[in-house]
Amino acid sequence: MPHTVPAPDLLDFAAATTETHDVPPQDARLLADTLVTAELWGHASHGMLRLPWYLDRIESGATAAVAAPEVVTDTGAVLVVDGHDGLGQVLTDQAVTAGVERARCHGVSAVAVRNSGHFGTAAYYTRKAAAQGCVALLATNASPAMAPWGGREKRIGTNPWSIAAPGGRHGTVVMDIANTAVARGKIYLAEERGEPIPEGWAADADGVPTTDPRHAVEGLILPMAGHKGYAISFMFDVLAGVLTGSAFGSSVVGPYAATGRSGVGHLLICVDIAAMADPAEFGRRMESLIEETKSTPTAPGTPEILVPGEPETRTAERLRTEGITLADDTWASLARIAATTAVPLPTTPPRHQELSA
Image (cartoon, rainbow, N blue to C red; front, side, top):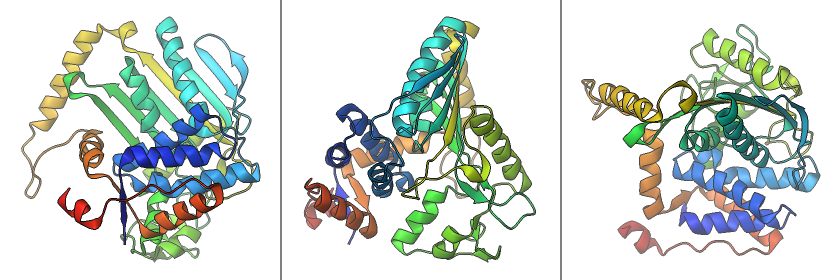
């Protein structure tokens, strides 16, 4: 039976169990917040199911519990940092702070992070930069998941990326996508839930299309938009892996493996809106774009037009009241973590309370 937990309780649990792995309290809270935020946005594939993966990597030594980034190059507008296998969430959050500060000084900034780890949802960080008056683009690379176009062996990561911008009175508009038909975490989520995956998501190890998530995990995730998804993913590996001096291609290790240096690279580009335009005027122009887009006549069966980031905002508003519902396998994983860390599992409301919420 699925378990529904209030978001603050889930946050406290994830932070407390992470602290037992010698992660500093502030960093543990950040990691926990990225997971719970993903759940609130409706992206359980990047939520609590990943907590045991991160903790296993810390326990094995593949990820350093205490981040100790080192500046490699600093030219003012451009900063290159070696993350020395620290938590990707911590390193990327620090990159946002540096990126916004430098964009304010130089109009634009580029922060490269090498030797990092998986950071969760890219939008978590670009939203932060947008809230501080920047348009931000964040690219990262990932362990091999798809085959090059025409190939039958995985060599290219999903290599997700995000762009966020202030939207005036409409809040933040934000895009966060992988370059595959679906993020790999959604296949793991389907496997945990015992559900088939849609056609067009993946192929098995022999390159045969499959709807079985177990075969998909060992096989190939298909690119979005055919050869275009492959090309975009390849080029983001150039930006996030090759250019940053980090691992790339098949040398990147994902969070799904408990051991092995990750070698993930990130590239954050921030543009200070005030350096290009009057921020108030930018806000009005964004509002005009959003309103024109949302006023488009809808196709049959579509109740309304949504702009990028709007579905997540609405879902978060609802789940902050209703609570976060976790799949049985995810709850079982959390129970195992609770048993080994001596951190009590969050309590779940009685079933009748869930139904009346």
